[in-house]
Image (cartoon, rainbow, N blue to C red):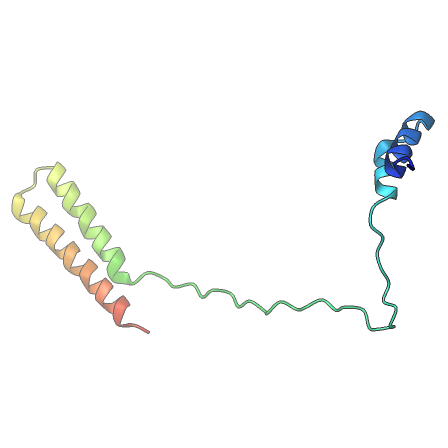
Length: 106
């Protein structure tokens, strides 16, 4: 029975002082050439990506945030329940309006 050639190659590489990794690479699979003379494979092009358009927030969103901050300051400063509820209610109405406009837009 014939000895294993791969084992013999790696043992020989160890005795000679060569790196076992070099022996491993030497016996790896070879690239095959096209025997029919065809054209080399071409890389497929990826589709061009368009940048995502930046959608700014509606001004009502900023107004709602402003009135919510005013309501919070009025609540902390104990200005009065009427002013706190008025500012908070206006903030909610503006927020709902901004959502309604955003849903209606294409």
